[in-house]
Image 1 (cartoon, one colour):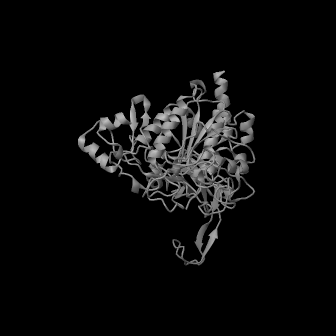
Image 2 (tube, each protein chain N blue to C red):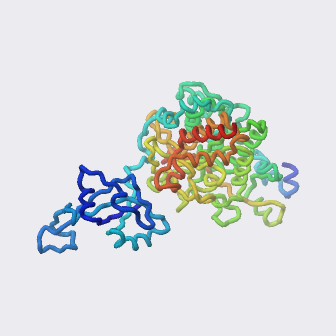
Image 3 (cartoon, rainbow over the protein chains, first blue to last red):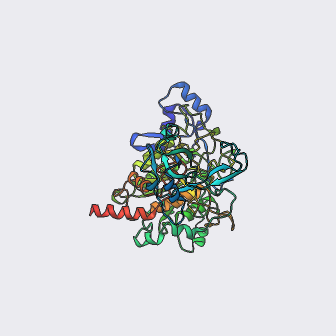
Length: 66
Length: 452
């Protein structure tokens, strides 16, 4: 996580540390993290080597039908 | 499209069809019609001609006193057939007037009222056990022994599930996983949706070992008690990848049942936005789903409860409600039928957003089972259908690990062996049909014989 923060120019306040750094596709060295909307905007503006931001929609159980 | 074809053949033939002591067949009435696949299982029916009761009546009007004549010169005969969907208009216009055809009519599906949310249970889990031919699965040695089945949901209450099943069950504590900030231990969560899913998965795979992943319990500001964020599912699937990779390649198997999804586009970027989830195969969750399936996991997702007949009140997609990973090409998207084999009215219909042909298959739901929601409440939603199908997959995996039958091959097996319902062949209500254990067992035996 520290390495990812340094690489992206983010602080610990910009990310969800409890969520951590998640390996998305270990074969391709792809990782994900949960960041604040402000951090996402900053990353996009500074053109860092990353993809996203991606939506993080709410998910709910499919039952019982209401 | 199914059609009824009205013909006026020779009076002798009409008389034969109308005579209850004689048996006339479709072949007797017609030796074929261009562009129509005649249904030879349908017995031709004689239809009377409405004739004005008064000799001065209008022969073209039905709005007058009529008598219905079955005289051979008056009556006609109806056959049943099917016309290709992309030729309906041309066949409907060209057929009348040819080969005794009087007219062609639509033959719509007529249904009893479908089971909807709020309806009482239709049958119980022993009916599901019977329909899934669990005794035959057990006789084949397909009971889920040694198979890991992950339930990504609201957490499992193992004591409740075991009590309702009337037998023991196994929670794999070491390989279970809990999102950050969620209190509780695997198998000891409050009785809720996740316990229903666990119960339903164990109907066909009583010896499977369950991994408890309470992904819908993650806590965050503004969230309700029973929802989560897709990022929690991303983390859960990353954990499941480590579970899978730790297994020996020769015996690897991991079944994951997912009875959840997104009801609304409100929390998503719009389709076309690069960060969108619902329609975007490049979204990280859709990527990790593909990667996990490629690595050997069987992933099943509920199709959702947004069927047009009686959708869940939360459904907010204007169309194509099977979205995101629930419509992923490498998962089985599971719709719901009751134990009579009828689609439940809330089961989401295709096409899907990532893949058109969704749902893939249907499994049973809306039966008295876990009683996770009270004594009188059924196990319902495509939420129940999904783990029912996942249990069947886990049973198959007992002797057919991914090295012997890849997840893609298994998906194909389930689709090809399914009991076709609705329209002939694939349709967006039932997919390829209802899971059919007799067909599956037969196909596995053939495969084993070929390999021997």
